[in-house]
Length: 239
Ligand code: ATP
Image 1 (cartoon, rainbow, N blue to C red):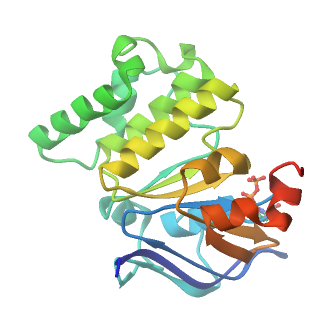
Image 2 (image 1 turned 135 degrees about the horizontal axis):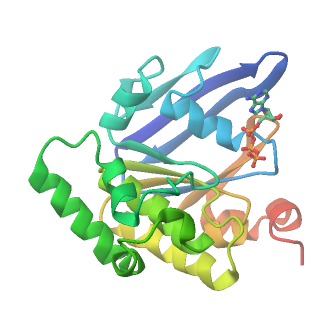
């Protein structure tokens, strides 16, 4: 049996009077790509922020590789290899591509490890190598997304959490970003992928969950979800 990388149990999150998550539970097995699907405001971003320690749940637990990290600090969660690529990329626009990548390596103390990760990021994302001296803010949307992913790679992810990586990208670039995510996963990194583009996400995911109003209402293998009439109607644009 596969070991569980991430286990969320009965998470409740409130922002003042708004209940963003209601008893949300899900798991990501070691080596899996798991897609989180759902409409605007369903609670997908909140789920990732709770894992990262940026949002504190009112109830429930977050476990990473069996250990309870519900109350851990964001830096210690990063040190465990839980790396969050936020929605909207949030790259440093006045820093160069190379400097942006180095920012991902701030917790890395061993210089040889840092160099190896930088080399690997440039190999997986060759476009970044071509543009390494260019300011982040001058990159195209797709390149900025690749840079945000590259920065996460330099941090050494055991579990990579991506929030809407396809947002605002032309179809060819969506495919390119999904291919990169698949390559990263093939090297052993587990992935939790939040996407509004359910079609693109289900192409690379092993399993998925549908979130509605802060709850998981449906889950299954990517094939099961792709064939489910509720998913087809609500998230795959009907037929
Ligand atoms: P989107 O794709 O639009 O980001 P989402 O599925 O990621 O949607 P969340 O951003 O997690 O959803 O939001 C879940 C709910 O919590 C929504 O009702 C949202 O309005 C609310 N919410 C999110 N962040 C805050 C906040 N900082 N303060 C108050 N309410 C919030």
